[in-house]
Length: 123
Length: 323
Ligand SMILES: [Cu+2]
Image (cartoon, rainbow over all chains, first blue to last red):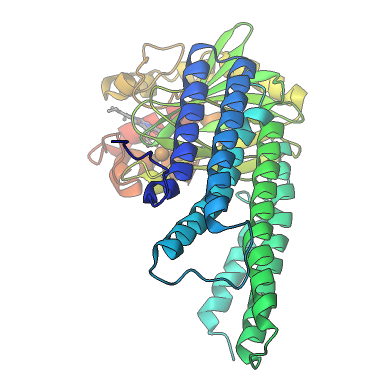
């Protein structure tokens, strides 16, 4: 038998993944800056570049999840449609919608985490 | 509706604080002006957003529902509740960081170490000829950028001279850096801005901004040992040594070299005693020595309530001669 993937159809885990990516990105950025500055205390450039690379990776990951979510929701905007029923299809749509919104939110959050490292040249 | 009287009084009192020695609207420092430049747009923006939200809320409650409301409502939620706040928050973050960057990037002409203790400030000036020790009063040259190296010996304190610049925590085992660039001469107030124990509220200091020439002369004088006229007061000096004051206080040029309390070598050149608590005067010094814990509850200096009046006279005269 095949084990279900974490973001498989019908799994609620898809809504956890975007915040998880944000949290990991946040932690990694924090650690990189803290460790780098404790050792070097000078130029921030190398640390900033690694944070930028991590940020791009995180944004790519979030947009991939976002695409999956959009497919399940059935598009990016569907004004007026509610998913309030209790069928499998409604559930799928609802989770897709929630995950899509979370992707937008977490993409913004990831970018905000990265902004300081781009703006400061020194520790 | 009429506003109760005490609210008016509180408002007036709050505004009165605005032109004082502790006001960050005094424009006494380049860093304080940067913060002020950030404050007004923030304030105006916040008022505008708050007003807009209130207007929308009133309209929404008063209107009769119509068919087209659904679409408009969704648009308002998307743009007003999602996109706009995201843009505003990002803009706030970026302008805040820009201010921080501008404050952090000034090259400095002078380095001063400020070491917070419960409940006073050790101040050490770095000069080409060595370190100059002082306490509770920080003198700065006008128009020059001074780098402050902030640390603490015991618990977390926070350094804040609102008229001149930002506020920064002083953390044991760490050295935080802050610059001050005064643009107005005068005496400005400072305080500890992080609760640090019993006498936290009485942990204050003075910042004296001087013309660069006067500052240079003062720094030379401050680096000298105690005034010869004080050292000639044998009775006062020997009482100072015998009563145990010397175990905690340094007076350069004498055997007194304690480091528990503030350096008193040039006490009488300072404006205040007890970490900004009382004006320097004969009467206040007597009160400080005989009623230390009444004046400053929790203070780490013993009171000398039973000191004979004649001894007290001598010690006070000696201290007042430490110019
Ligand atoms: Cu304190």
